[in-house]
Amino acid sequence: MTAALLLAAGCSSSGNGSDEDQGGSAGSTAAGATGVAGSTAGSGGHATGASGNGGATSGAGGASAGAGGTGAGGTGGAQTVGTCSPPADIYSPIQKLSLTGCVDPNDPTKLTARAVTYEVNSPLWSDGADKTRAFVLPAGGKIHVDATTGKWVFPVGSVLIKNFLFDNKFVETRLFMHVDDTTWVGYGYEWNGQSADKQTDANIVGIGGDEVKFNTGSRTVDWFYPSRADCMSCHNDVAGDSLGPSNMQMYRVNQGQTVNQLDQFEQMGLFDAAPAKPATDQVLVAPYTTSLGSPPAGATLDQKARSYLQANCAHCHQPNDGNNQSVFPNFDLRFTTAFKDIGVCNTPVTQGMVPGSTSNTIFKPGDPMSSVMLTRMTEPYTDQNGDGRMPKIGTHVVDAQGVSLIGDWITSIKSCP
Image (cartoon, rainbow, N blue to C red; front, side, top):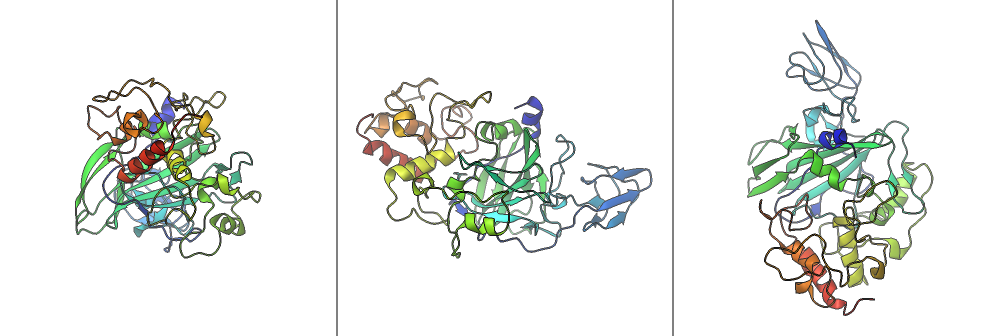
């Protein structure tokens, strides 16, 4: 990942509450028209689809007149709604969510009608935030599914959208954009409308991240925006950049639906070729009950624990992939890797011991309290011990249900294979 990409990307996480998705059934699209590709004319300059300050919004190909429009971030003149596509200059993202084209410009709490919503089997822990997920494909673009890994490969120009909410209040929206064959960038947007105020828009998060005390009207949530470089540490090349979409995550029947999500997307013509249906033992399960559902009947403790580790840990903890360097290649927490090959059982730590703990073993069979894997999950976040807890990035609140699950899993394994 180049330095330019690291600096340009922007994502974030953290807060308090229950982990839920509220995006509706897969394949549905949000209501509301979206202005697209409007042009702006003005004396002394031109606008190119980013955010000026002041002026009217143009969409659906229409033009708006304004004096002195100056393009991205310009002042005076009309504001043009984008097309929900990567910016021409990754260092100059559109400053307001309402102008990206990824949402309804008249009501940014609604997605563009082009967005396809989806749900996953094993959601990433995001400090208890409710989440909705969607993607927008470029005109004529199709998703390719890797026949070996089941990973979804999005065409250049695609945008993945994720909203984070507490008590039905938006705190953050992330746009993850496929710029070219080798580059993805992400931008976080911080929402207005705390407490009883109406939510009308979200502004781009700064390059260094931020922290906000967000009042939902029912409680105050401590929400962290990591730096843009932190974002790309998880969305890395080895993990495949976009982390969620894959057969193992997307093969599911969503609540209120009767057709499998994978089949539904195939019927919508979203793939370049019909993807093979994954085997049952290649599909993640819900690790514990959330609004997305509960673990299926018959799901084993191993399936639930390994599904949790896949979603929350494996993007960093997996081997190098050719010239692509993993964040931590020493062991492999991918769901499809046999336990005997993941490299943690009775393995000494290589990153030092957790302060206050006497354990120096990553996974000690039958003894979760002596396993550094679990100790790091239980560490509370502080500025002083940020490197001691796991996951290292994107969360500041301990996942109590996740800790219980992994603890039970370690207890159940009495010896190394």
